[in-house]
Length: 183
Image 1 (cartoon, one colour):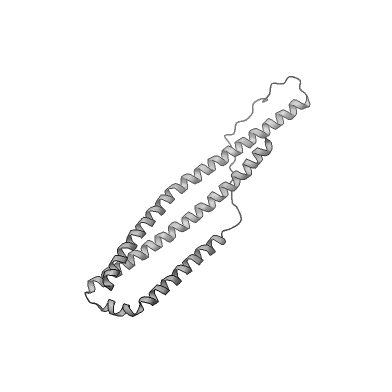
Image 2 (cartoon, rainbow, N blue to C red):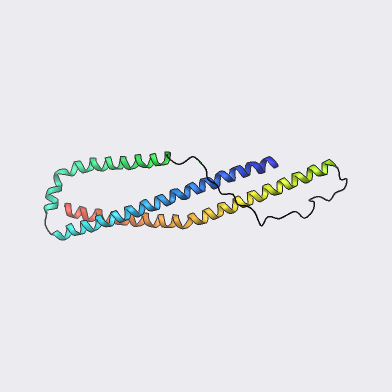
């Protein structure tokens, strides 16, 4: 049982570290999506200005580069994918975990067992029970830390989802405007 508690403690520490890394990645994703959203708004504004131009210069100038644009967009996609995979590989390996001291920890005011013989077996059992109690307290604190991390990440995920949906709708709108300009 003690080995199981120690393994749960190790797994809990690794999980908390992974959640902290995930939180950092979510921050980066949110910042990048915000930048993309800002860039898309600028592009949308520029395309709207081109629509108001009222001339077909845009269509005439862009027609010869139709095939070049396709190849260029493929290159850009490859660069973005490459950067994304490189960033995944560069994640830091050191796990930073904050251990909290349990001031509210239950203090044993007496023996866990009622002493019958007062021999070494009872002493050994008492030590094991104290060790198990400490292990359970550690696992409980790790579970609380995991809960806190998940509660922190929940609104971030909602914001990321909202930004993604906004970006998708802006891209669709800009694509429609550009198609109208080209035809």
